[in-house]
Image (cartoon, rainbow, N blue to C red; front, side, top):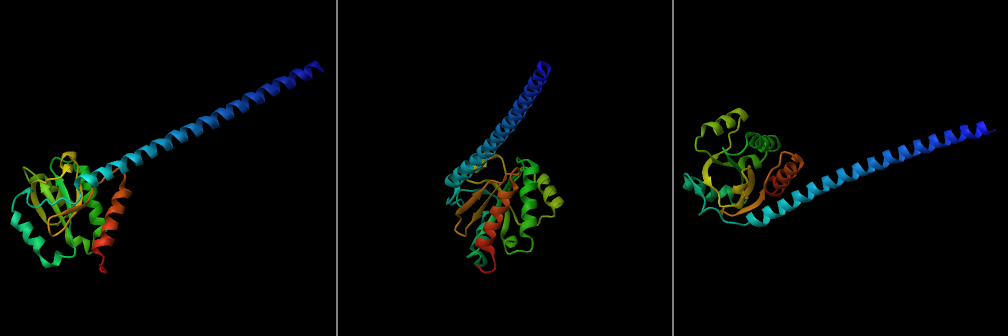
Length: 205
């Protein structure tokens, strides 16, 4: 009888140990899931804060008179064009100082999402380059034929970010809907482009 009790005691102890191990594993998994969820939420919160700050600091600024660019009259003439009165320019600001992968990301996305649309006709590039060779090589490689304006400096705080950025430019030279694409979160760029396309460039607008 004592032997049976000993066996039962050993079995019970083993079961308890197994249950403890399973409970610990489940707790650790839940903890890791919680930590990962918190990290994801922190990243999303950081992105929202950055987007909010960018909007407040850069939107509704008239850049036309204080922008340093070559051939400013060429841009002014286009902005005065009657065809742009109800449909603003969509500007992508790029520079030879930006990482090429970042430039490729937003340019390829525009090519894919706007091909054959009304928005495609209103896309322009504000490019900075001491030597145009690198940028022109990139445009040729991507088969890009958007109008290019050589702009040394845009009077927006985003110039200090050293990343490509986008905005809408109205015919009076005012900037709106400033956006910093992040190749780590491509869905936000999709939403941004698709929202602007629907608001400004759909055939019904």
